[in-house]
Image (cartoon, rainbow, N blue to C red; front, side):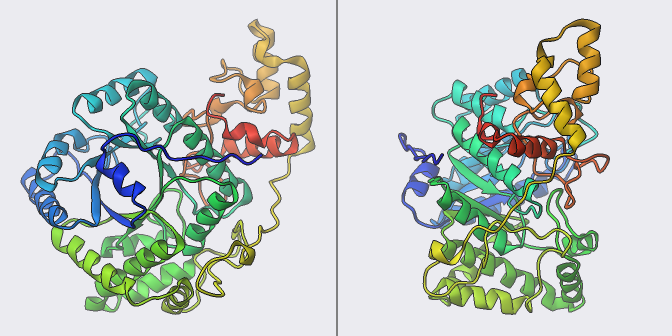
Length: 460
């Protein structure tokens, strides 16, 4: 069943207004360092970015990360008043679920509201041994909607997944976030423009009308060194060919940053032509870097008249290499980035064949027995034994097992209940590398039993 989601702009929030105008916009992301970092340097960097942003009308907001560097990162609330006063632009505060339960998330949201913060980006947070609890981003969105009607809420999605279960799992959860009240979507950082094209086509297919913002990054020399591990962020992998290309570019010395600048600006142009509402640029530390990106991107936007011209240049720039290896290379649509004319008519991009992972006969039998016996209602020792045998965990379920395809979500290190996080590895394993993602098991069982619609429900 197709559901259409509409935007509702009802206040004077500048970010809302910019998205409503349908003009392509820029968000500048500042990654907050640890508290013991040089505070004067941080303030100098932020001041410079704010002063440049105040003069540039294309920059709609400044985004501040939360606990991205470490558990001891600076609190974005410490910088938000400075950003508002110096730039005249609203801050977007990332709200990470790391270290939170529902009660503490409500307290955090109340603090943001009391400080006049309207724009937030809800994220569950990457797995971190420093934390033993996580609040699902869907729950953060729900609590924000209950607490403050003026919150303008962003949610994250990771389109850079290359297995059927992983890809669809991200989109199912994205829809749950939208149904829960998300007002705009921000992607994870990546370089595979086919996947950004895929996300645009998916939203069109599902009649989802919500602003999409692509999070893009300027690759630094430090990042380039980390590409030897085939990725720099949890949940986003690259091919050996792309990693080798970055290594060769690093060997060019002074030309390295010029090449990365061109790559980033080509991505920005591609997002503009494909229909993204804007981009959130991360990896920049100074006003000079931000200014260079903005000026280069603006000039480059005038160099490409059609999306086909841009895609030809993007492919030539990367010498035709693939952004992902051959072992896991699922794309939801055929012919991505193969534009025939001035537009990307949906007729050119048909759904690819997709088969969810098979469910073993043993797991099918466990599901049927658990359903017939309604093991979610069983108490005492007998109930614990049944749950251990049939769902894989004898502990008290964190959610009604009948709503989780009788798969125990206690096996998820973050105890997420609404769907997968963005951090799963290329082969579908959990971010911790110790077991397969439990939500992939759910997806396969849901597909087998015609329950995929339930995975888009934020009210499980």
